[in-house]
Image (cartoon, rainbow, N blue to C red; front, side):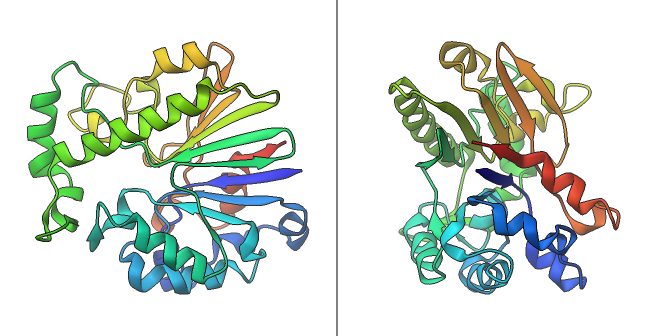
Length: 264
């Protein structure tokens, strides 16, 4: 019972270039999939683009088997506290909204959430948040209610804490099968930049202690567009980003997408 997890599709940009990354997969791949989980960054401007892009994905796979939750880009020209609207758009397309959701397939549970970051990666969260305020596009393009002002890093930290609480609550619940965590943001510092960067706390947090405590079978994530992986204890930690079309050579699409195939 295979499940395909992928992130950072930026599908609007692919289609604008006349490319469909999913066309690289044979039809029988979609016929056998029990679920397609999109771990964030389907597209900017979700209120306009999500309906069209979910319809497009429906050409490949029954929308009822599609599960999607937002990455940071899915809040661009939207609001950070706008998950209810994204859930409505997803339901109208016949698909499933997977923010803070458990998806059970076979003997495997997939625990899904955006996650965001705590900005504490280099031990100076206040400094990292100051850097992010001026250098992170999220603070330019994402708004918040009720006054529709631009978000601040402190806003995403609050969401990170909420998502992390939810995730830890789910991981403490007994489960007889396999557990796969699926987030947009990175949980492992070794899978970020080659050398320490001021951007690292924007892209990930150090959740190795959480991984060691709960020992999920795998943790799949996106956001970085860097196809890396490591093993932390018994947990496979793997990036499943596809990336922008400019980053992917023709013929490479299937290889990148299949990094996220998981047997349940």
